[in-house]
Length: 380
Ligand SMILES: Cc1cc2nc3c(=O)[nH]c(=O)nc-3n(C[C@H](O)[C@H](O)[C@H](O)COP(=O)(O)OP(=O)(O)OC[C@H]3O[C@@H](n4cnc5c(N)ncnc54)[C@H](O)[C@@H]3O)c2cc1C
Image: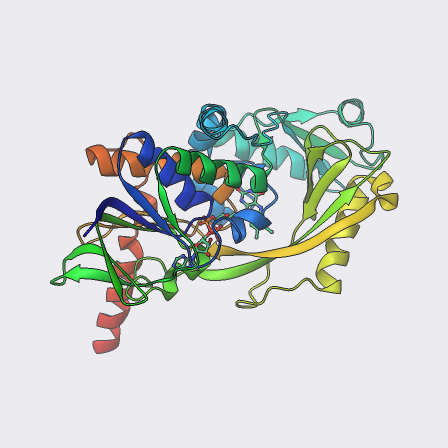
């Protein structure tokens, strides 16, 4: 019977990026996906690469996100050269714009926070914002420039990663759901069980997005839930943005040639994939507020996706107390950004059991420990 060095449950950008990285280290890898790989959250995203925290919950993620942004160009170029496909990488920065009477105070607070976190956010005069992006609303009251931020066409990039992995020797099994782990005793994972078939591997990596928690035995390490986000794609003859534009109400990510994607909503509605009039109108009104000339753009696509969220909104990354079982999920709003650093971390864990990045705050055992604490509190 064939055995693998690693089996990865889930072929989204996270599973695909880890697979590609492990194959580059000459490991035998199998990716198993319950549908066609690359069709879930990684397909639905906007592709913004922004380590700036969008809430207090995201602050602990900033160092990991910054480290991932730093290695993005080299990861993109490795994927592009291995796959022969373009990632649609746009390292042109982002502009945050602020409206309303408190705009200047809010901007000062944001810049102070970002600089403390080591981000290169700088104040941008309103007139300079209009020079950089002439279609920005002239009614803005303040603006900031994030020069080192970038964007990627996440659909193209995910496809390129999966192709790069395949051409590097990774095997794929589509339309097969990982149901259970194959365990030896209680403490060792030696593979997975798929439709009754046992497939063996030295390492099993769970990268099944929001559905990771549905795999038997995984919820204690990755209590993932789906968090819906709706999106709209626009095509404009007048507006061809260069940089990502954000406000507190939404964002616009250019794709080139007058196309942009704009979002989003954050909705806890379970596994329900549909767009709603309320969601789409909220997104469009935020986009038109930022760039009024988009009022006339064509709506070319609407869609939604399910982000893999966790109770503390941070990813679950790394080894567990079961030997051979690793978790790589819960990337919530940042999985496209975090793909390169996640892949690097997993290659380091698996090939040298040593990492150069500080990841302890994201270890899967934090959930297992709190589950144990809840159980013991219930008993006493
Ligand atoms: C609207 C929206 C906008 C976003 N914007 C951004 C952004 O701008 N920047 C950013 O960095 N991130 C963004 N994200 C977040 C990002 O998309 C996710 O964090 C990332 O795609 C997660 O990747 P993944 O590979 O873990 O999950 P997924 O892409 O969901 O892949 C998981 C895979 O696992 C498979 N699977 C599930 N269960 C099983 C099983 N039992 N067995 C086998 N396979 C299984 C699924 O079929 C799927 O292919 C956005 C997300 C959404 C929805």
